[in-house]
Image (spheres, rainbow, N blue to C red):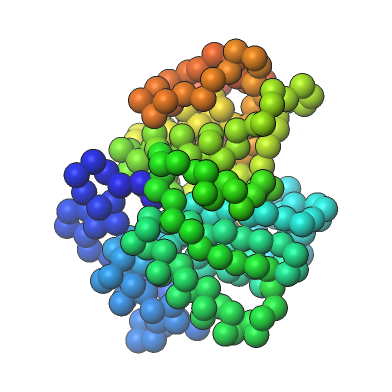
Amino acid sequence: MAAAPHADPNFPPNLNIAPLHLAGTAATPDADAHGQAAAIARYGIAGRVWEATAALVAYLTPGSALEPPCSLFSGPGPHRVVELGSGQALASLHLASHLPASDRIVLTDLPEVVPLCEASIAAWRAREGGAGADVLARPLAWGADVESVAALGPFTHILMCDLVYFPHLYPPLLRTLLELTEPPSVPTEGDTFGPEIIMAWKSRSLALEESFFDSFGRYFELTPVLGGDWDEERIFLCRRWRVTDEWRLPSLQHVMSPQPGVVVKRSFGLVDDLFAHLEW
């Protein structure tokens, strides 16, 4: 997550959050399997497991009945996966257990949160005994240079779990997503291109989140994942709309505004067209 100009986004004013105990993790109010209480004290928001994690874990499980099925278990490898704002990285490490050693998952977060990611990797490796995908952690602040992380690709998938919350972070998050999916040359075939983004999301203030999704939808196609027994959580599969020679990567200041050179294949007001159907 990218830092706000004058504050640590992981420690907003009046922060008061408790650990989330997901079913199937052996975590109880008296025994937190993920050490969340201590992690929250040290890392703030990044130390908590967030609600959309359960939906993402379900989707990243082989044999899931969700539609469309997860391409990580059917498409050709090797897969290269990067997660933004990893924090505890519960879902991505769950995924790593189901992938072969030839696949790689790169966890990313603010530099001061990378030790949490590394501790999660170490605990996961101890449990798995060396099986699963290659997993490593790297610092990445949204809106900053992605070159060192991009060098670990090219990525086939990008994971996002409960990242759409503070409006001041929308522009740097969107800019980072565009940089990580930027094509080496102008695509000439298909309506979409690039890595598949698997986005797990829970709405907390749709009036605010609308601005992110409206801008996001001008660059990315969104396909909802259906069949989940979830309350307010949703998963979207997203890929970049095709671009033309007119396309230029927008600056952080202009990334939320419509840009020339994007071939959007449908016209919509995203909230009216998509979010009106949250009863999927």
